[in-house]
Length: 77
Image (cartoon, rainbow, N blue to C red; front, side):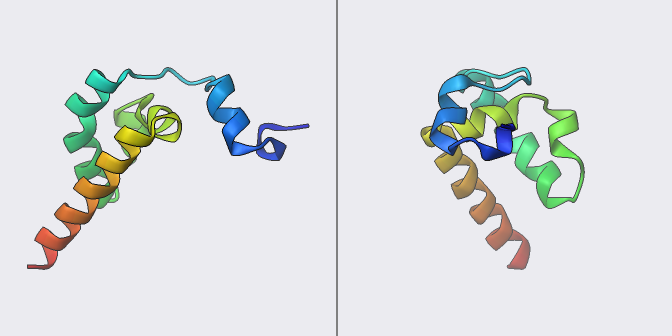
């Protein structure tokens, strides 16, 4: 059985093999991460561990989605 075969909830509980940030580090790096994503840059390479944190933390994932939506709207205006 591979990681792709496991239930997403179980994967969040088990954690990631990647380095993982805590919420404070995530919030500190989130602006940069989203800007890199929107620029088409490899955000995960520049901010290692942030994606793993977003998968396991609903609060930070919601903040990520909100910030991304705001910046996408700003770029259209």
